[in-house]
Image (cartoon, rainbow, N blue to C red; front, side):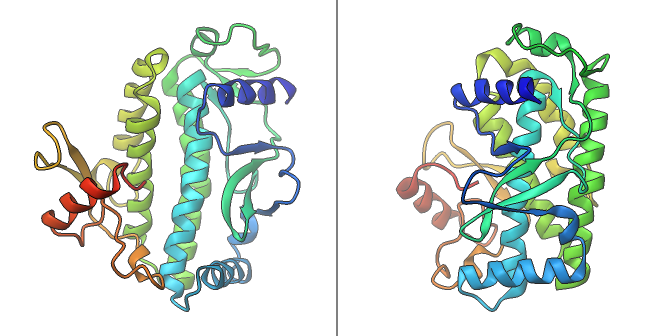
Length: 279
């Protein structure tokens, strides 16, 4: 675990977005086992808490914002490690805890019972000083992705999506759209642009966006729309589903630039005025 923490520290030094904690949550922050959220009582308490924090009685919209934030922290933690250095952590619901700050998802805590998986060729190309003695070696990236995706999607996020739908009534298409939009942002804005991992990121992005499905591949949760009115090469993701942020109090006119509810003219105006795209 010490070498894994050392590796995470090195990635933080390179300004990688890695909201991952090992063994313990930071002082002053609390953590909740994800398995608790798979009970009706635990999930209801969490959604009600988020709704109160956001100042709304709209539990469906609160559930979407909760799942969106949870998914972003989990995906950033696990996919960033897998893609940047070939290290796989098995983040199933029994191993994962949600770290909360001010009542909202702020990170992921993994109390690893399994040793990390590692595709050594990828890791040693960047950090040859990391000692992987005792880690489980995988033969190629396909095998690495198989184990990582199965734990994170099938035994974590899919379970939570189903439970939120059955408990609160939020459409799974909205939550799947939350995941697709964030995965596209993570690879396109955070990972592919880093020269040392560009080839890794392109390969993993294709696998993530096209081999995982909850009714549709992630690549089918949004469209890329060219907006030359903003800039010659400007394209923006336009989601197929709204994340319901505009149903929060005071946010009725604050749709994300990726929201399907915006007209083209509104989207262009937001991009010109707001700059970076909303994740």
